[in-house]
Length: 112
Image 1: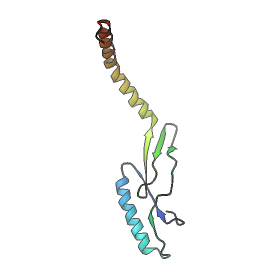
Image 2: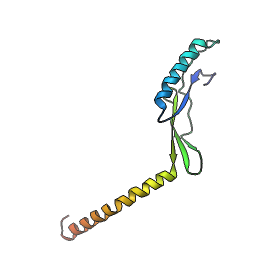
Image 3: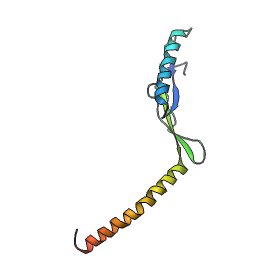
Image 4: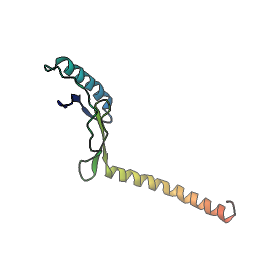
């Protein structure tokens, strides 16, 4: 919440952003109704977060600018990405070998 701009924000993981949006709308409504200073409140748009936030040596958060006052983040673990990439490459190796062999055979036979 920013008192100077009258903007209200929620921060949520990508999995909970819908719930946070509705919560934010309820908060904005409540603040507009009950603020003793009668300031106008609205979902925030002006805050620009750092797009990458390092959480530890292998983990970081990808942070999106606010949409409808909700700042959405996704936590990414580099170790998990490396592991999944290794599995993907390993599963492709037999297929690549077959395709390379077929291409070499066709090329030798003048099939290209």
